[in-house]
Image (cartoon, rainbow, N blue to C red; front, side):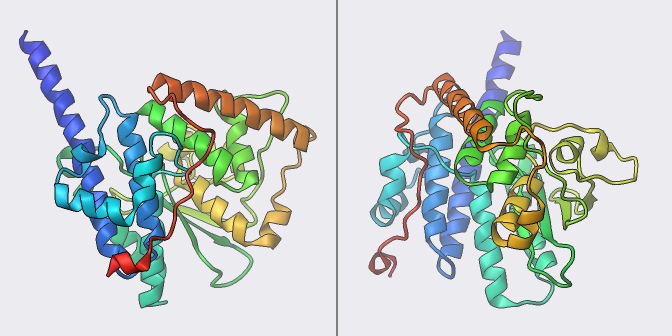
Length: 325
């Protein structure tokens, strides 16, 4: 009996971490939206409400935002997340939106030491979310990518998947592949996800010589070497023998994926050189792989009780500015 009570107490504490961190992220985005694009707050609300829906046990919005006045205010200004979180799947996880907001605000303020300032600001938030060793809705790493051949080229930032639990993470990787990541990056991920090896499709690419792609730990404030998964997908590697190099993390979870996707979407020259070279990388095989992945996504959603998906991925909307006054 004592063991059961202790287990239930630990499970309840974990549930509280989800609610606590969800509210902290929303509150942070509300604060930052006064100077940044509030469409990102719309996207964060939908992503968090969706993840609350598929949480075990589920968390409805009024449990995540328990203050009735705040909840009513958010619903008035941002009605879409409340309307669609039960039928549409997010394109990305919450901290990806938070990162975009931090990048936007930092670039408004200064062009000096951009990279360190962005990493520092995100670390402050992560430290507040990790209180009491919480892990829900937290990204562990950030990655910075840029065109290696152009001095002081634009930097593109990404974070590791910020969900809660193994299946929600797999859902968001599939959703990001199908809806938001650059097709070359998504192809590299789909080569190994949901099964590690596909004989009929190889979308891996070689980026080591084209880009700088550097990950940083958000907990320990240090550079991180690419893991085995990133080497398999993108040809990223280091000559050093490190612990990171040996690890093969779940494909699509790493911060490198989002960072590289943004770079390839914006750097045409790099993207042209990054095209996968395998004979199995054809439009027909790619579509076949995407259809298979969509079936996997539907199965995962049903597993988590999300049975009303309308096959749409959520598109955030800029709120009526008159309501923001």
